[in-house]
Image (cartoon, rainbow, N blue to C red):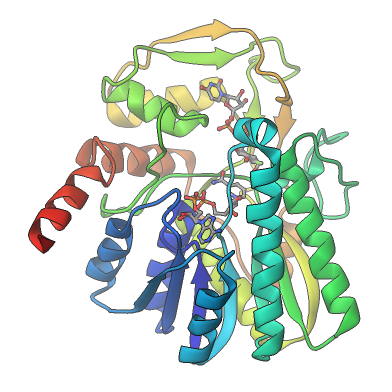
Length: 347
Ligand code: NAD
Ligand code: UFG
């Protein structure tokens, strides 16, 4: 019996694969590598000293995906695969709707056909839109401001309808706050394409000398220092949250939503200071205007996940900065270099 991990080569997926393998699960990975590299999976295997099957398959390729279900005995699915760049989703919304929503519908159709009804889904705090206050509980009203966010919200609704139609389904909707950090080995981490959109990969690229300075998007928010406040969570804590959610879906039927964050809000300047402290490096920055669509404060109330999953994030901001830096320092060009070697070796 295996756990199917869609998008397992990606940032959060690869860290979750490590935790799953270390906890004795058998896993099968499906990824089309549209935003990741096979090298990440090689390193997952190297870190855990365990092998697993991976398929280069697009969720939209129904026939290829059905082969995965036919060839394996799957017990549950952790569904990470999706496109995730907010700005890009505004430019190419149809691609986002097709990839994220159609991909999920096709996956669920096969799960139903093969009687695999345990699902952990990657949702996002983006479904809360502009929250009226913080911390945010799961029962806050939902509203989204961009196509990416709408795909998450629509999928949550689709999965709700699916459970309503057949209560043998067991589903956990995990709303992540801001995952950062990397595996403490420095072997796997976040490998964004092009100019990073998110704060931590941008800071690490300034630290390594790839970018001159950080642009801080506004210092006039209603926060302790005027810069935006977020709930940064270490990717390993987040990965562990998936194992707890998996246990839950395998032991009951129903559908539940959980916030996965630390419950603590840090500002952009807090992150910069913490990064400077742990790396002994200066991060030059300039204050620029607010980024369109940004909100002032966003952090989670994690009581429900603490109580019902028996899960709590334990790593602090310094751990997150330290591990992000180790990954960046050891892999200045992400997974690229070793990929070249791999291709050469195969030729
Ligand atoms: P990622 O891009 O690193 O990983 C997603 C993986 O899915 C990639 O390996 C990509 O190649 C694969 N993929 C995309 N479309 C696919 C398809 N049609 N078929 C097969 N594979 C496909 O992203 P991540 O940061 O690891 O995020 C994982 C999930 O968590 C995503 O669904 C994302 O929307 C969600 N999420 C991420 C964040 C964040 O800040 N990183 C926050 C909230 C939610
Ligand atoms: N920021 C900067 N400069 C940068 C990048 C970010 O000042 O170069 C600031 C932002 O204005 C914000 C904070 O850093 O105040 C965090 O920004 P990120 O882009 O890292 O993260 P967001 O909170 O904007 O969004 C992220 C994901 C979304 C997801 C959301 C909630 O990108 O997809 O977290 O999970 F929906």
